Length: 212
Image (cartoon, rainbow, N blue to C red):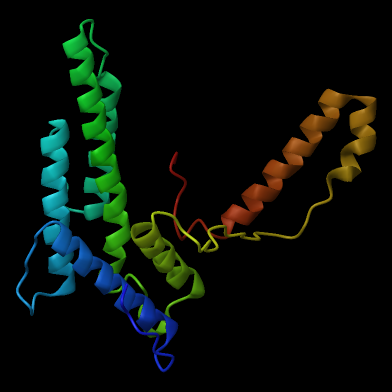
């Protein structure tokens, strides 16, 4: 990327510099020329709008109307995949050729959408700043590697384990289960439900279940 390694800077600062360099590369590729003092988030929005327009033109799908970028991306993904699913192979040589061209357009659109996620890590606050966690920085580097190398060499932690209560040994129901499997299973499930209700009772003030 042409960046020198400055060990005096913290890791999040170096990740941020790399993200900005990637954004500059995207702007050059699409011939987007923002004024020099344009805020980073506005530059990203301009690139996103350009790519959205490109995708809509390639696939002839309806443009998203949501104002939140993540929702716009989800809508765009869904519409492109719906368009791809609607494509049917032709009966003649020419219609088959048209079908292949449409599939190429769809693949180009999907590639562009995947790239959106990569360079959006340059947005203000995305890296996390001085208090950035290792997971946040790792995710940023992962996205940048996808853009620069086409694949990632970094595998950030993406699994969270939340312990809500003490460990529960269900072997106490084993004897009952051997005697009567249905009754033993029912007793274990009833105990599990009771334990879950007790655990959730202490956090209901924070939120409510989606089905409530």
